[in-house]
Length: 224
Image (cartoon, rainbow, N blue to C red; front, top):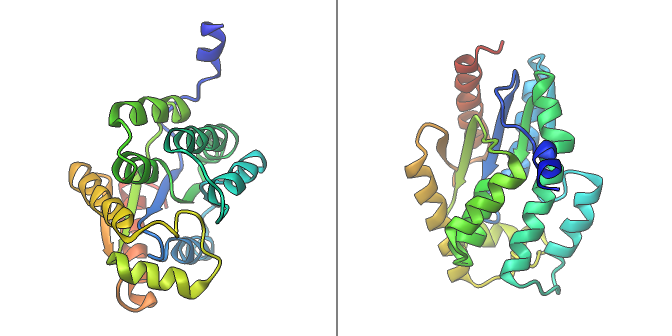
């Protein structure tokens, strides 16, 4: 059984594509800027796969519904396991195949969300979080992570304005403050991969900053 599980584990081998993730607190604009970025890359002639977590696969959408239902209740440990189950499906079924084809994968949230929310804000054991995430991803890491940074209260104000709050949106302000602190800690420890983008200004300015960072990552990867 152990050997069978090992054979099915996704491999984080080098890939021809570019893996870009967008992270940040609720209301920071990740989904909007992921769509804007993907559209710009397609216009520039790149093959693009735009996706999101949780729910990047058909099975994952059922997990997303369970995780984010506004009135739902999920214990922190079960929440962690569900996010990682969703990620394992996502990596195997969509992300790795797309990167192998040489596509640019733009993903709204990935492993750093789990580190910030379940590890940082829920205070789950960091070693456990890393072990489960490594099993889910096979060690796959983004080539570039864009942290769209806004103050917590501003982000929550934007989230309320768009309506349909999720279970996580409804957490207390201090929870979201811990998430933001965790993200900044991740960014400071992973400077080669993270870029912090000020997302407090006009959407066009944020989009331009995102585009510049992705262009630099494409050049570093030798993709044109």
